Image (cartoon, rainbow over all chains, first blue to last red):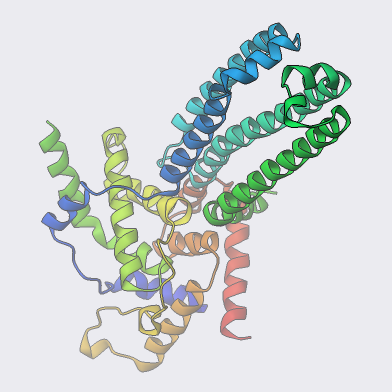
Length: 212
Length: 164
């Protein structure tokens, strides 16, 4: 008989000593709030969805005027329509995946469903970052090619700027803003995955490895 | 109706609380974390309780939810200092049964089990609770054959921890 079997025998025959929690104390626990990882994932995911949606909604009116005058107002309107449809599809999948998280599932399935929910949000962010980069390149390229027209619309001449200076300042500031936004996103994901999901990912891989 | 459900739940949990304590003891290193995990397991059990259909025993159903909470859902709120005393287990022993060698062996074995990773710990816990490989595989979501293979490997791992 090996050591584990000796422990098993004793484990079965003797009772472990633990402080007994009373009926009333258990009852009080039912009213407490959960601090489980699922709750945090839900809160963070909803915050991310709201963040990306609100970014679309808070674009200043003046920006739209400039876009209209540059002749791309209609294209923007239709692409925004497609964009919000994609948002709705993502939110639907997020909700569906979130609802499928059940603590009564087997451990592997539970972990899989949690990671699936996170994955939906991850793709949502990839989509937004992708669209952000793509539209920045297209719009910047278009603006750069028509920088003289943009220069006139934005009336930079009154601020003593030359059209050549304006074009380079415009491109450099767009690149700096782009890099900053990407840096913040990477930091955010490093924090979320580092703090919240490290243990879960490790355990999920361990279970997956068992079934290989 | 709700009051009745609450009463039935609390009563059954009170009677079976030792299972939850054993899991908390295995997955935490101090009394505060033990209490936190106990509370989180209670909340998760209570949330899942309306769907408990009674086609299995309450205690059997508890294993799954409690282990899932310990392995998957629970996050320590802050880093706490490990208490060495908490690491070892204390069994209720009748005076005439006391055997120092077995007692020491048990403590060393339990300490070795606590050093395993979360999944291996769950496997060993279910094994100690005399669950069948079928039940173990259904709880963790792996095949029965793989649960058996993994258990043998874990036993080997424990042997190595005890005799490095």
